[in-house]
Length: 344
Image (cartoon, rainbow, N blue to C red; front, side, top):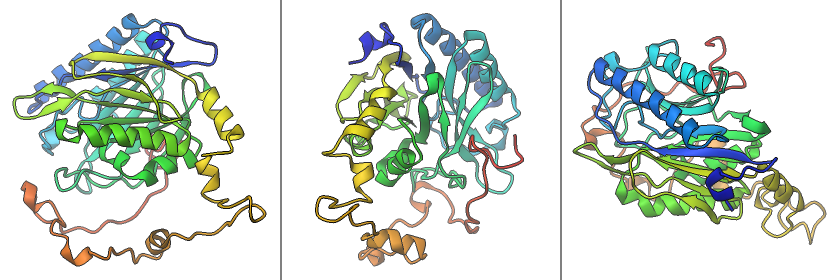
C-alpha cells in the first residue's frame, strides 16, 4: 500500500515524491540557470503537492538534459550557484531533495553526480555514478563507492544512477551497507522501459529493500524520455507507478520498519543473509565460502569473459568519442556522505 500516494502518513512512514521532470535542452550557461530555476520551482510544487512529503527526487540529467555535452562552461561545481540554489530550496520548503549534476573534473571527464540535501540545506549524500552508460556516456567512472546515509525519519538511504541499476551487484552493495530504501535516478528513453521495470522489481526483492526510481519525461526534440516513476516494495511488488506525463510527481508512503522486520523475521527468501549462509539446514551456519568465480577473479584483477575476444565495443568510438588515453587511478577515500576526504 502507498498510503494513498502519501496522503495518509503513518508514524513509521517515509513519504517520497518522484518528479518525472520534462526533459530540457541545455546548451549555454543561461540555459543552465533557467533549468536550475525550474527545478527550484518544482521543489516548491512538491511541498505544495503533499504537505507530509519528506524527500523529493529529481531524475538524472534534470539539470543538463541528454546532450552528453562536456563543455566546462555548463559543468557544475559543488560551491557553484546551482548547488547553492538547491540548498536554499530545501531550506525554504523544509524538505529533503535528491538532485543530479554533471560536475567539472579538473583531472579528466566530468563526473555524473547525485546529491541528497536535507531540510536544513546540509549535504547528506554525494555519489559519483559508478557505471556510466557506455558507449553512450562520456562521464568519468565513479571512484568513491556507494554511501549509505541516515535519511529522513531515520531510514537508511542509498542512491544509484540509471545504468548502475542494471548490475545486481550495485543493489546488493546498497543492501549490504544497510540501505532500506534505494533511490535510482535515470534519464532512460523508451527502449529501456521493460528492463527498467524488471530490474527495479528484482533489485527490491533480491535484497529485501524498497526501490524508488524515476526517469526524465517528455521529448527534447531528439530523445523521448519515459518518466516511469515507480516504487517497489521489498517483496518485489510495485507500490505506485507513474506513466510518461512530464512534471508529474509520483508519491508514496514507504515503510522501512517493515523492511527491518522482514530482514529479521523471514526464513524463506531472506536472500541477503542466505548468500553467505547457504544450506544452513544441512550444515551449521551454512556454507560460508565464496563459490563465485567472477567475484574471485575481480578481486584478483583477472576478470575475463569466455566470449571476451568477440566483444566489438570497447570504447566510445561508435558514439563519436575519441578513444581515451588515460588509465583509471582507483578509488579514493571518502567521508560518510561520500565526498572525497577534504572536499567538504
